[in-house]
Image 1: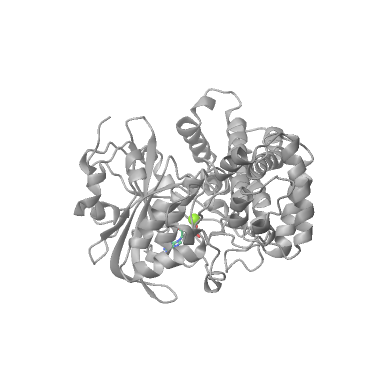
Image 2: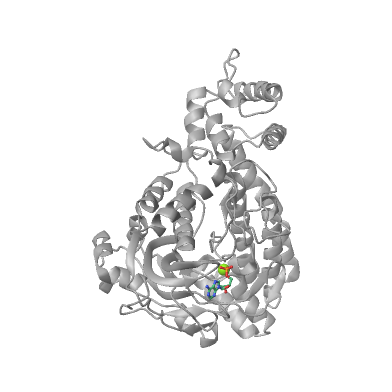
Length: 491
Ligand code: AMP
Ligand code: MG
């Protein structure tokens, strides 16, 4: 395998070969204060066959901080539109992100290098095209935390800072992150050509997407319907996984929905601390449209928007049939995740009631979602066991005791062995998640130019299921100050 330097990366810019209406060619606007590397993610560098030593070169911060281009890059901002909070906005587009180029690695995998925070583009509207350090850190860490959890997501290559001032509610400093994905095409990329009645472009986009990312469908006569069915399935799988880990996206507009079923566009997201199905992580989401328990339904709503754009090319009944399969698919994936979280191997209808009762107990006592599931691995199925530690989570311990009897019976009915079950559960119930207060701690230090906490969290969260020595405090429930941090779209 060839290991590359920055200069020898191989680019193949397929998006730049699409008609020019698909994008605007635009170069990053350099910061006036020299960019400096805050963190480079070795795991993502490996995906590019990029020599890890390259991160130490000033050119690395230069390229990924928006000051330098390297040969082969063809920077552009992608055009799209989307439904924001249910309302169609006819034009959005990359307002503060630039697709630098597409790198193909030695395994033939293609990765978009998408530089976020590199200045204005023709789609910036009234924005400045910049990202503040705070939001760049949040995206950088959460991409890798989600990947560590096994959830499909864009990846994060590096985080670069600058002393340039960026104006939000207060004055902050700017930063860029480079995120990577096989494609940044969104539901909204389809919507813009549909609503503009540019069916030729729309078909071109669909053909391009199928050819590049769903090549197994390219020759099928009903390729558009089958492509849609695949997007439905991927979206269902993605959202079911979010529900299982207790994560909310916060701004599930159609322009933030990846055509590949990846978690995309990290903004005011949140892992819930106390279990609360109505959890709203985005403080600007006044009506709770994107509340935690709305996400599966919103996925369907967004898929319906996408289905509409394919009406010119695919039979309505086939699109509808694919949509009709969505909820069943979410339920199936969710059920499988939750069964695994309970440590159950066999799939039985009665488990739904067991789970419902547990969730009802958890909500009544505002139990910490991550801690409880992890600790459930320690459940002793010994008839004499009191399971004191688990019991203490609940305001009504007797009701937990009653549940525990049912759970024990259920475990015994499949001859579950406690030690085996625990190691199985530890592989699906994470010990560490990116709680808001942990991200906040890293942000506050970084604002004082201490980036150690960013690095520590990155390393920790890349292995969220593995007990890491000396890191117990990172698995703790938030202190009071950390429970109600305000995160909104302003980033
Ligand atoms: P988001 O809520 O981050 O998905 O962004 C919605 C739209 O606003 C997208 O078109 C973004 O590119 C654009 N946008 C967000 N922040 C900025 C900014 N600081 N400057 C320019 N455009 C932005
Ligand atoms: Mg977005």
